[in-house]
Image (tube, rainbow, N blue to C red):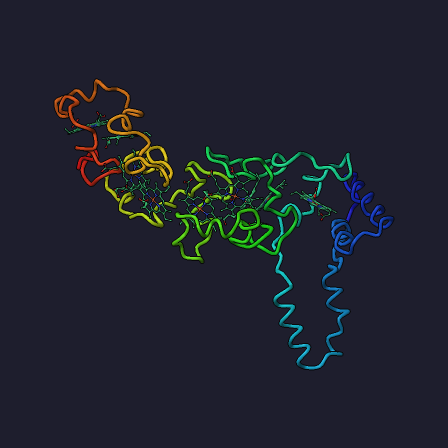
Length: 276
Ligand code: HEC
Ligand code: HEC
Ligand code: HEC
Ligand code: HEC
Ligand code: HEC
Ligand code: HEC
Ligand code: HEC
Ligand code: HEC
Ligand code: HEC
């Protein structure tokens, strides 16, 4: 492997590693970045256990324990490709090419929507993700709901009136987006249908905002006192978007005497113009 200029940083790290006597893991990370075939420290540790000196039951147990405790790592592609300098600065040892989340957005699309989840909205990607590798999918720091419970009180969620009757095996990310979304509560687009009838989304003629899953343009939080949890009452809800009031003074609109939902279904219907 040729040692180009951009490996100088790594060489510095390597010699520093020698001086500071860093951990086998860090040493391995630095070495493997420079040379191929460096044995990972975990493998060395396994060999020094000396399986053959153990009796049958012990070695069976050891295999079982290893199966449980040896995580199958998922690796971050730029780390595998040794593109260390895409994140680590070549000029300043120990520094990054950019702060989070910009460093991540150098390669990942910034998909930030209106409602942002606390730490992701603030750009602390590493609050949930590992930069190099992880024993969990999506390079996460923890598994499934446990990741969420590392910051959210499990008992508080379990007692919440919205979450109380949920199947405990439902994943938080089935309903919430971990990063951001266009639905309040950072809900996933289809989240409402895990409890409400999917029929709303299966009409032949769908209302624009319903088709786009923007439920929250008309509905608000479940603890709201409003009728049907609506944002506004009567025609004002509709006129918030359909602003040409003169258009609704036509004969078929009954000269604007009735309310819109007397004739139109707000979600959609199988009749044209979402007529009831
Ligand atoms: C996607 C960006 C990214 C890539 C690619 C990357 N790193 Fe890192 N690395 C980080 C971040 C973020 C940290 C954590 C820094 C901190 O804790 O402040 C880190 C930490 C480290 C550390 C400190 C010890 C540790 O593991 O926490 C070493 C050593 C290191 N990286 C070496 C490398 C090497 C060698 C490569 C290339 C094989 C590499 N990194 C590739 C982002 C990256
Ligand atoms: C040098 C480019 C680069 C940088 C910088 C980078 N990534 Fe990635 N990342 C990739 C590529 C390439 C993939 C694999 C293809 C994909 O899934 O898009 C990936 C995949 C991922 C995945 C999915 C892994 C999986 O198991 O499916 C996550 C999560 C991720 N990156 C998070 C981050 C975070 C957080 C940062 C900032 C700390 C970051 N990335 C910085 C290039 C980069
Ligand atoms: C609160 C924890 C949390 C934070 C903070 C967070 N993520 Fe994630 N991220 C997740 C979870 C959980 C998943 C897996 C999503 C799923 O299973 O539906 C994920 C998946 C990903 C993926 C792979 C899937 C995809 O959507 O492409 C990328 C890339 C990613 N995150 C990048 C980032 C970046 C960049 C940041 C910082 C702006 C960030 N994440 C901050 C929890 C988080
Ligand atoms: C690193 C800490 C951290 C982790 C991990 C975390 N959260 Fe959060 N979460 C926060 C913070 C901080 C807030 C903002 C609290 C506030 O604004 O009062 C928040 C708020 C929320 C909200 C309310 C958003 C709103 O607009 O009403 C939801 C929903 C949520 N988190 C779900 C999750 C889910 C699902 C996960 C797991 C994928 C998760 N959180 C993991 C820190 C975290
Ligand atoms: C079946 C769908 C669903 C699942 C699964 C779900 N939530 Fe929620 N969650 C909601 C809805 C709906 C809201 C209400 C949004 C609002 O009113 O802001 C909500 C609100 C929240 C809030 C903000 C309000 C509050 O109670 O503080 C947090 C935090 C939260 N969820 C965390 C979680 C966590 C953590 C998990 C996983 C253990 C989870 N949720 C699983 C549907 C779900
Ligand atoms: C354009 C505004 C609008 C949008 C967008 C909207 N709704 Fe509604 N929704 C209403 C109105 C108005 C009512 C009250 C209907 C009535 O008065 O009979 C209602 C009633 C409801 C009800 C209770 C009555 C019923 O039909 O079961 C549910 C549940 C509901 N909506 C769910 C949703 C969901 C889920 C979405 C997103 C997919 C959504 N709504 C999007 C306006 C809207
Ligand atoms: C965890 C299950 C759950 C999820 C997810 C959920 N809801 Fe509900 N929703 C309920 C329950 C239970 C009620 C009835 C209890 C009440 O009226 O407070 C309700 C009531 C409603 C009502 C009032 C219905 C009426 O007839 O007045 C509307 C509107 C509504 N939800 C919209 C939504 C929207 C929009 C979403 C997605 C953002 C959503 N819900 C997600 C459980 C859920
Ligand atoms: C958040 C904005 C918004 C609100 C609020 C809203 N609409 Fe709409 N409406 C739209 C959009 C977007 C379209 C699609 C326009 C298009 O396709 O040209 C639409 C289309 C329609 C159509 C025509 C459908 C067709 O087949 O051509 C009717 C009828 C309608 N809305 C009635 C209503 C009624 C009744 C209400 C109140 C319950 C309402 N709208 C509230 C955004 C909204
Ligand atoms: C008396 C019944 C009735 C009421 C009340 C009514 N509509 Fe209509 N609406 C209709 C009919 C019938 C059509 C089909 C008209 C046509 O053929 O041009 C229609 C068509 C529409 C269209 C699509 C055609 C266009 O002009 O773009 C929109 C948008 C619309 N209505 C919005 C509204 C709104 C907003 C309200 C409340 C302010 C409302 N309607 C109240 C019966 C009604």
